[in-house]
Length: 101
Image 1 (cartoon, rainbow, N blue to C red):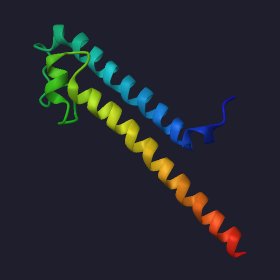
Image 2: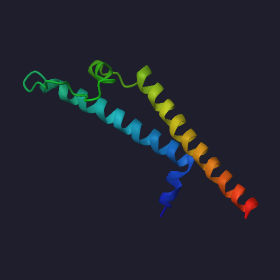
Image 3: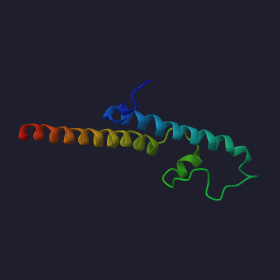
Image 4: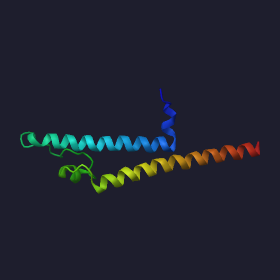
């Protein structure tokens, strides 16, 4: 069984974001498309997508949009970069404590 701590590495966080955000996006688009035939009989007051950032993109029904790709790649960079910076900061503290000790 894979080690869950691997998800706390920069690469693990990046891969997790790519998988989860991508899955969420494609399942939401698929659900919105599947709902179209019954949308007139059972209208939703707020639309299918709850996130205001993506409402128009989901309403259009495209599988890949610029906004999705930017958030997909941007989120991966942010999560991976944040964990990489945190890792270096923690390793730097350990090294300085070892020198001082």
